[in-house]
Image (cartoon, rainbow, N blue to C red; front, side, top):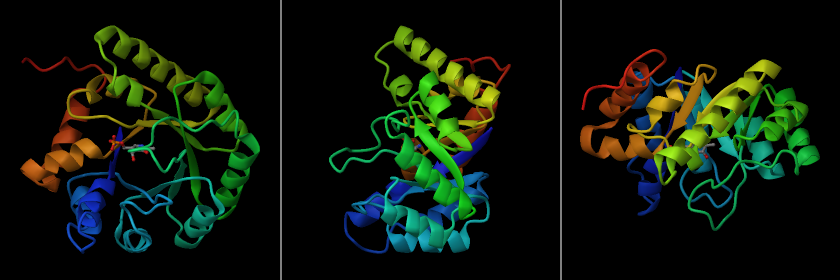
Length: 247
Ligand code: PXP
């Protein structure tokens, strides 16, 4: 299973002082050195963390794959078409939210999302849609011309008890299985950390996780290289067929 490391929150700390450090580009290089398969960033309309310069520099520097999360706006599409990340993940965006709160409503926003997906695909950029674990949204994503869907794991991560976490995990697994069956690459992410990543890794159809906040937070204690290595170890150990480690 691939790991995309989201370095937005390195830029969040930098933007607290509007200076040059810490540098998300440097952290992206370290993440790749530690084994990350992809670097993910969200260029938000309000530029609260990642800036346009970061995106351009990352395009130069990233050797694995660059995944740009963005709203399906004209401004973002033209930036993506000029920078050409390997993948664009279309996400809903609200100015007042702390982070991406829900999945994209592909069913409701069909033509606009389909048009954005078409422009990106024609520009040579792979298109993924960030959706809730909902079978109708998976079907709508195929119709909208996506090549992949990233299934929102936030409700699983925030589940108040085991039963709700298990129910949400089932929804994620069902959505991923349907995506795989109809030819969409099933990905997942949001709110995943070292403790809750295991059960998601055991869903066989999911091929990639995008994880940011927990890795960047852990990097404050152990450094970026070890934070990424620990997550990769956790994903491998907790992957299909493995038992939970003894406590
Ligand atoms: N995937 C998507 C589409 C996101 O918007 C985010 C948050 O930027 C992530 C993954 C990573 O989430 P987290 O920072 O909670 O790991």
